[in-house]
Each structure stands twice: as C-alpha cells, then as structure tokens.
View 1 (tube, rainbow, N blue to C red):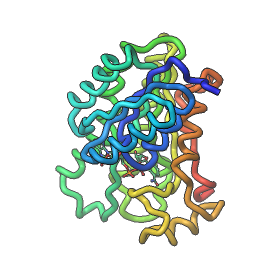
View 2: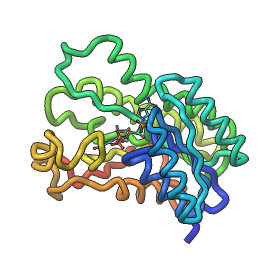
View 3: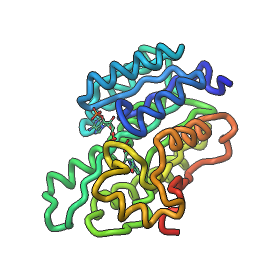
Length: 246
Ligand code: NDP
C-alpha cells in the first residue's frame, strides 16, 4: 500500500547502509525521495536507477553534512525538485572509536558537525516548509544511552545530544503539527559496522537476539514513524537493537 504517496522525503547519507535502505523503503511506499551523500557518486547514481526501475522517484544530491550551508542547500534543492518537503530523515553520521586522549579537537568538532550540527541545520531549513502531519526522524544510536566498551566518548556524546535535540525540537514544532523522533539502532550490518568486522564477536555477545540487525529492519521502523498511523509519537527515542545489553 502506498501509505506515503504524494509525500516528499529527504534522507541525509542515503548512498549506502541504513540510509540507502530508508531511501528504497520510503520510495516503495510512494514518497518521492531525495537523498544526500558525501562522496559515493557511483553508489548514489546506482541507487537512483534502482528506485526508478522499481517505479519510484529518487534524486541524489551531493552535500557534505559537515557544512551547514551544504545541508540547507540540499533541503532547498529537494523543495525545488519535488515541490515541498514532508519527511526529513537525518541519517548521515560517522563513527570514530578510540581512547579519549587520542582524539584531536578538530576530530571532536568534525564528529559533532556531522552527527549533530547538520541535523539542526537541516531542521532549520526544512521545518518552515513543513506542516501538519509532517515528520522529522533522526538515526541516533543505542550508544546515546549505553557506552558498552571503551573508545565511545565522542560518539556516545553525539548520539545523546541527538536525543536531547529531538525532545527540544519536538516541543518547538508540536504547534505546527510536525512530530520529531529519534531511532536508536543497535549494531546494524553496514560498512560502518560490518557483521563480519573486528568488533562483531564482542558486540554479538551483548545482543539478546545474538545477531546484527539489518538496514531494512531500521528502514521498516522509519516507514512506520513517517506514516499517518504514528501521529501520536513525538519527542521519543525508540530503540531498535535486538535487546542490546538489556
Ligand atoms: P555507513 O557508514 O554505512 O553509511 C554512511 C552514509 O552517510 C553514507 O551514505 C555516507 O555517504 C553518508 N555520510 C557520511 N558522512 C557524510 C557527510 N559528511 N556528509 C554527507 N553524507 C555523509 O553508515 P550506517 O548506514 O551504518 O549509519 C547510518 C546512521 O546510523 C549513522 O548516523 C550511524 O551513526 C547510525 N547508526 C549505525 C549503526 C550501525 O551499527 N551501523 C548503529 C546505530 C546507529 P558516502 O557514501 O558518500 O560516504
């Protein structure tokens, strides 16, 4: 069923991983979907072709999330191409794991720029174009609540900031009828955190279900939260983590 037919979505970091699964899923239920990427031009173009071959609408936009103007430009390009914006999915993010004393201040600023500041910039550009029933969704992380092993200082900080930003924005945007929510995945099999990577055996031991999640499973929750049925959920951080360290 085309639950999102007539809606326009923008997904940041849509060229690979969780973002690409979200692009495909939202297009499959009828949304026209623009997505950003940092450098993976070829993957982005392939994804547009894949969505179009399945009868959907997609648009790839190169926009580096570390630059707020670039993010705002992607919002206005989406509005120009598809005539508006109803669903903003802040997915682009980066993971750096190392002992706190090995991070430079430049790395701190870059991680916060991509994982937190870009979300604020996107919302500032998109919300004024949105209205009743529209949706802002962010891919945070279970690491916003839990730092299960050493090396997570900056990533955990950024994902906790995302949860707080979600609550504050949900308050600010409620009068406009826009809901704002944060998804907190546990380990999901992507290039960022491969199910056969070096961290995998340790992580699997912490997951009740004993396996990594799939990007399509996160995309399914995004699709639900973007739908009219999810109208009474706002300001929430919702775990989708296979029972990570419960
Ligand atoms: P991947 O590294 O597999 O993909 C990252 C995507 O974000 C790519 O499309 C990439 O574009 C894009 N991206 C990265 N940096 C930028 C940037 N500066 N500007 C624009 N786009 C950028 O990551 P995942 O799919 O695993 O992660 C997606 C989100 O989910 C992130 O916010 C992450 O923190 C979160 N998450 C992931 C988990 C996991 O276990 N995988 C668990 C919990 C949360 P390009 O292809 O051009 O590089």
